[in-house]
Image (cartoon, rainbow, N blue to C red):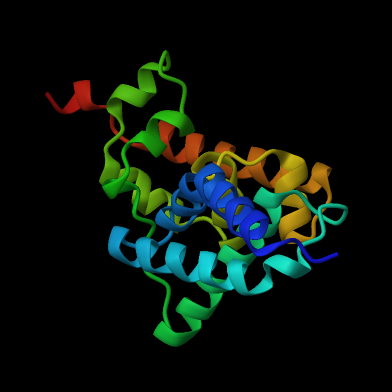
Length: 178
């Protein structure tokens, strides 16, 4: 059922306002800020072209948009022929969300160390963490986007965080070097 142009335009504006930060955060987890901005624009351009085909019975708006964003990111990496490091150094707030603020280990970590550790994770683990902590998606939304089960999303997240914790525990503490 086609919507009148004014309703369609306003519906898309609302979709953009509601989800642009989540799309950008997801993309910024894997590429530089300027590239994330470009890919965010490309995501919403693709979404606008496909907006009339969006079916809320199949997925939520956020899941639909992040699937488009993930495809744009995949296309970007294919064009680049290599994967660059995760850019949490440009978005330190992501680090705060990854490890609890009350954890003394959080005070020891540096952005460079965490970026390095994230780079050691599998691509799937990086995608799941980016969607969970960068785009703030639920396990259900991540499962829908990545064609996984919710249990598998929880398992991948748990293993990735355990790997990061083990890596952090094995690193010399800041107080030891002072």
